[in-house]
Amino acid sequence: MPLHRKSPTTTARHLVGLAVAPALLALAAAGPSAAAPPPTAEKAQAQAAQRHGGADTLRRSAPRDLVVGTAVAGGGHHEEQDYADPFAYDVEYRDRMAAEFSSLSPENQAKWEYIHPRQDFYNFYPMDAIVRFAQENRQVVRGHTLLWHSQNPEWLEEGDFTDEELRAILKEHIQTVVGRYAGRIQQWDVANEIVKDDGSGLRVGPTSEGGNIWITRLGPGIIADAFRWAHEADPQAKLFLNDYGVESVNAKSTAYYELVKDLKAEGVPVDGFAIQGHLSTQYGFPADLQANLQRFDALGLETAITELDVRMVLPEDGIPTSAQQAQQADYYRRALQACLGVEDCDSFTIWGFTDKYSWVPVFFTEEGSATVMTADYERKPAYHALQSTLLDARRGAGGR
Ligand code: G3I
Image 1 (cartoon, helix red, strand yellow):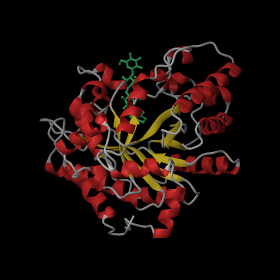
Image 2: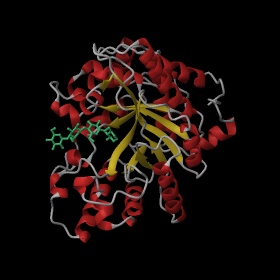
Image 3: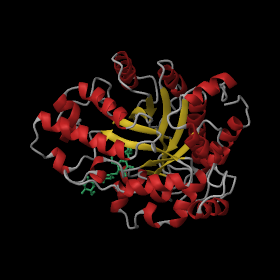
Image 4: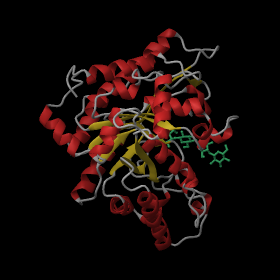
């Protein structure tokens, strides 16, 4: 599989087309301690990077046109655990996040129920902190998410709004949130998980059954409007569709393929298709992942892996066997290789980097160990698989 598929010419064209100001990307690639003398906060982060691996980190191993990201733990399942907010209080966690990654995704902090908990009130503090941290550490940010069926606040789902009012609420939310961070977000997941699992159509139906309130009430045209409003609010940000269960060429991913063609034909500013990548070793690896990314690339879209993790059914003692670890490493490696093998797959994000904060054991009773580091931040074989694959790509074994 060609890991490095760009000629110098295509690389230059490719960089011009990237989501964010080229200067921002160059900074992200350079790492926490690169370039001019940093201000105090950056110096501290650079020192942290040294303490936790120095140059031996994922972001420093990556080819220059690929950002390597993680979800930033906070909100959601974390609120049910017996620890304080990881991003706010866990210094080692923050240090490692700065050292290892060049892209950050708010795990829950920019979702409606967090950032817009009351109709007349936005809580920007957690997301502001992430964006500030990213700037201090020369990282880009993926915004997640604007139009989704899940994690919507009660005032919205239980509210007695007319269709006209609902439309105005969505428009105002998108303009406010996207506008606030304009110029500082590389990619936005504008529409998240909008297709039914069997690929039979959009998520239309009661919210109690997983229906998307926006599409159900306002019709499918609201998807195009959401992209247009987001584009107006931040013309620089690249705007994505994002979903799980679309790793392979299957009914669900094909539904997106057809949707994208329609949106593009209408001139809707949709820039990318993102595959989340919540995998489990109890199922086979989606061997056609690269081919699937490639068909969206061929439509002129950017692609991304946005939420990769690889869970496993744990033995009774809770410790993965070496065979399980090897299989997990293989899945991580192949997912990364698939992205590297596609020209405009420029963003590769894992959904958390330490088992300490993973969502997996909370959702899947017998599964766990899904991330690339143990709860004590020990690097697993999966970490090394990612790192060696990134280094191969960076060294030009194929020349990305
Ligand atoms: O809303 C309920 C609330 O009513 C209840 O009182 C409370 C107590 O149990 O739980 C609340 O739900 C929590 C939810 O976040 C909303 O905050 C869930 O328990 C909690 O497990 C959930 O976690 C988040 C999940 O999204 C929600 O779908 C995870 O932290 C987060 O990692 C996960 O991330 C998603 C991506 O956004 C989209 N793709 C899939 C990915 C993994 O599920």
